[in-house]
Structure formats: C-alpha cells, structure tokens
Image 1: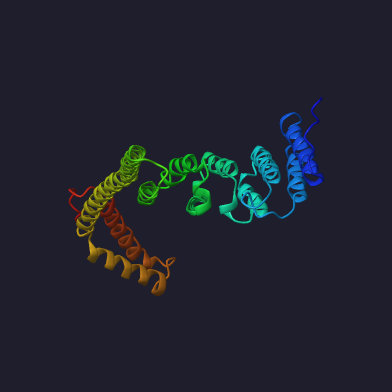
Image 2 (image 1 turned 45 degrees about the horizontal axis):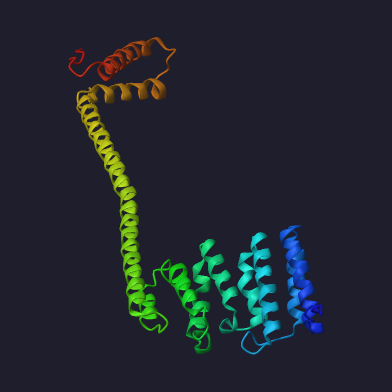
Length: 292
C-alpha cells in the first residue's frame, strides 16, 4: 500500500504553508519584508500559545521555525534591534523561548556587539527549572557564558553560574573556570592599556603647555628688558626744556600774535628747544644730550 502523506490539522497546515512561503521569500527572492509578514501571519494563525512547554508539539515546532525565519529576515534588513521584542510578542516571557530562538538571539546581539540586551533574558531562561531538563541547556549555558557574561566583564556571575550548574561535571567546570580566569586577565590588560593610552595625550598636553609657558616666560623677559631700556632712555630727556617749550608755545599761541615782529624771537627760541628735545628722544641712549 502507498503511504499517505502526513495530514496537518487545518491551523497547522496554514502555518506550514506560510512558513514555506516565508522561507522562499527569504532565500530565493530575498524579499525580507514579505518574509517577515508571512512569519507574523503564521504565528498569529497558531494562536496565543504559552510557549513550547504547553503548545502541541507540531504547533511549537512551526512557531519556532517561523520565528527563526523572521529573525533572519529582520537581521538582513538591519532591524536587529527589533528582534527580541518581535520574538517576545509570541512567547511573552524569556523562559518560554525555544532553545533555537534563544541561541539565534544570543549570537545576533553578540555579533552586533550588544550582548547586554541578552543579559537578563538569558539569565531568566537559564534559571527556569523546566529549561534545565532540556538537552540544549548545557550548550546554551556555554553560549551565554562566552558571548554575554565574559564580554561584559561579569566574571563573578559567570563563576557562580558554572559552579551552580549540575549539567557540567568537575572537569568541565574546571575548564570553564580556567576560561573565565583567562578572560579576566585579558580584561585587566585591556583596561591597563586603555588607561596608558589615555595618559599619553595628557602627558603630551603637559609637554605642549610647558613649551608654551617657557616661550611666554622668555617673551615676558624680553618685554621687561625692553621696558627697562625705554625707561632708562626716557630718564635722559630734558624735562625742563620740554616744560619751557610748552610754556613758550602757550605764550605764542595764546598770548602773542605770530604775525607780529616782536613774537619772532620767542618763536625762534621755541623751534630750537623742540629740535633739541626731538634729538634727545630719537637719539641712541649713549648719545649725550644737546647743550644750549
């Protein structure tokens, strides 16, 4: 007798058809937005199940496969930030995520260097007692350890997780504890190198400031010497003659008529005094002042 093909229930058959369409759109046509739409329609057709623990086996497998295809399509569209919330709308709580979906989420957020997104989600899933009996528990714990806890520097939490895990034997625990210790040392070395790299620009800035301060001090020294030279030069000015010339200028301009012949001797004397003062101001310092 010819074996009959497996008959899906009507709801599962609809979801299976949408899954096939979504896979074709993802792989063959690379129409990622349409693939996500098919995955959403398939998950909605399965109804609001509570997850893999209470849904029928066939529906749980279909929903998991639809979510896997949807995750890949969202990642292809660079919409990876939406992946976790998109998945949780169908599983509601992290504890109900299928192992394959959790694995993809951890790897995705590790690849985009956002492992902190999966910190609480992975911890909640691993603490759930029903998940500890799953055959994938050990591999997911290792994945969570290597791709979430260690990159975030959560070394104490990683050690507690390994020591409290009944899935690993003593040899495996020692191997994981050695990996944690090695990662801690590498983390410390990177922090020291980062601190040294931050100190180098500070030292360079201090060197530049020191050079500028030295130049400024030299400039101020030269300016002080110039002012001292100018002050010593001005001390040699014939102040009495300058005052006398100013007084005569006042007499000529205010009291005397420059056009009058009687004012000519005063004007001549004033011109002589200004010439002597001019020669004293603009002559070298060592030059003796002009005598009357």
